[in-house]
Image (cartoon, rainbow, N blue to C red; front, side, top):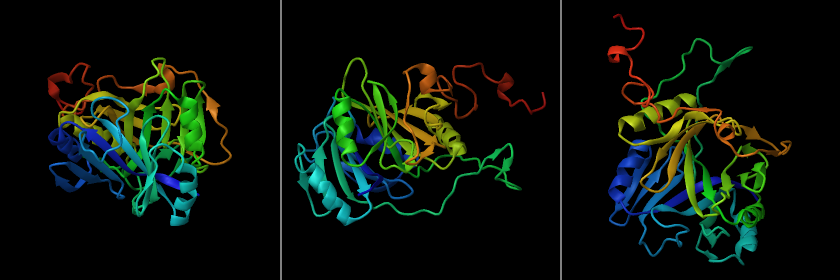
Amino acid sequence: MSILGIDRITYGVEDLIACRKFFLDWGLKLVREDAAGLDFESLNGCQVWVRLSTDPALPPAFESGPTLREVIWGSESQSDIDGYRAVLRDAPGFSESEDTIKAIDPNGLGIGIRVSRKRNLEITGSASNSWGNAARIDQPSPIYDHAEPVEVGHVVLFTDTLDATTAFYQSLGFVISDRYPGRGHFLRCAARGGHHDLFLLQTPEAKRGLNHIAFTVRDIHEVFGGGLHISRCGWETQLGPGRHPISSAYFWYFKNPAGALVEYYADEDVLTENWTPREFEPGPTVFAEWAVAGGLDGNSRRQKSGPPAADGRFLTEKR
């Protein structure tokens, strides 16, 4: 059995109009809409559904207000679904349709598994020229005026059942990448893959809910270009841009009208079965090697909380 990644997420929200504008600005493609909800897609067909929180078809909410209601994971084949059925059939809320099996995880979040509907893409991010490895020759790095996310890369959840929820996902084949002992577990879908597809965080308050949804973009330049565009559109930065020392990924977090936070990220570590999980003590420098407080202004390209450029001009302009 093999889960390949996130195939669809579903939010339950209170303001469809704000969410419509946000996800279009974010770079997703709107493929369907009606009075009850919105269907978006990323570049590879990963789905982002937005529904009114009162929709009776949604799984129960694990926190108040707009939030994530369901994650559908994509598997390789129908035979995999049969194997996962044996694992999930005794879980709360188990049900199955023609192509998806569903349940409620120990943290109260709706989950499902289906054969992946994501498309293969022939796109690559810009190579980096590090010392001794010139991977980009006679070719400048790109500049993006907005982002087009490739897919939903990972979900981060607050939990009050860290061990039980971790064990549940391990029964589906997830593997621990790194740990905050007793506080948090980074999990990837399979032994080989990106650093994490799911991060479970148990805070001292021991609450349940959504921390953020992360969208993969092509490279660090798209993190910056996408973030500057979202800033120009008037959406509020929570933190970033910055860099995570644990996964090595570059990030930029924004506040999301669909619930909690949303992230652009790129350049995460890729792990194999040879990886040994590490243990970290939570702290600001463990979360972010560096980060820009307040974000960057999309028009001036300067830190929002910092002083403006002299006369609003760039340093290369003649005075």
